[in-house]
Image 1: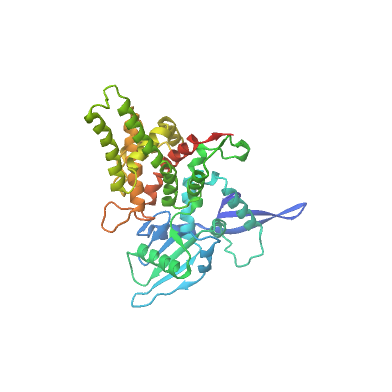
Image 2: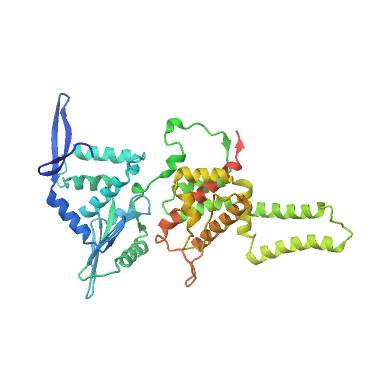
Length: 413
């Protein structure tokens, strides 16, 4: 925050407010004293566990909530307390974050300065300025953390118990299900999108002035899937939206590959229509393909995905996009499997591009299967929201593949 000063009384924010065109008054925001800071630190140190979205103490917990319903419908619950019953009642409340959580998130922002360089943070800066210049609301929390709380406008779920508990995460999700069931309003526990690092700006034009008119037209169905992926705030929907773009061509490339196999067979100089075994070999190719389609209820998707990668995806460009987006991803894919999907490693630096595409097709396809199949008892299995951090590292790979598929089918204007 601008005009933040370290004084004898603590951290002070001075808001310069114009009174008339020739004079400027200074309004001092209530200081954050050393005692306040020490109390916040002690309270945070007393947590039994915490992340950027969940904070657990022995008898209470607080979770940052990301509303999933439109028109800020979840705000209807703010300010309402839902007391529990029984010998060990649990109370739920939806509202703004505590000062401890605000302080923690401010530290998180300070440690990740790239967050505040994103275009949407302009709105936050304007909101802070408006708050500082507004003296009309006497009930406002007129402290530095109060200003930050109002400007960030986060929502948290507070869960309190009379006795110590270790299952606050289960209780929080149960409350969210209860709300969704009764009020048709959805939210999830997670870090607010405002705090996510949008690295895509590194490989894209972030300024409207640097944007020019398109020089190609693209397939509308693919564009719609792509826009759904870009707009999605849930990694599962994002990943599947991009996967659908590759899937769009599965049947075509699979059938083209079958035609090519038959063509190579009948044009081979060793082939003779007079030898029964030669003709039988061609029939076997077709039968094998038909058997796969029958057994799998369609084309062999993993094989079709590999064919899509062979025909439409340039590995060098894919590696460059991934490296520019996040320099750690290439090594991550090389050394890490996808645990929830049982998907293997991919060495994108391998000199054998056919081996890369084969490994890539297996990894992408197994992740996709883990997202759409969730039979109880099967391992590995994707847990919604629980595996989002791991899935988020797979999304750039799927997105850059999907982009090349779309672009490869563009038509010049």
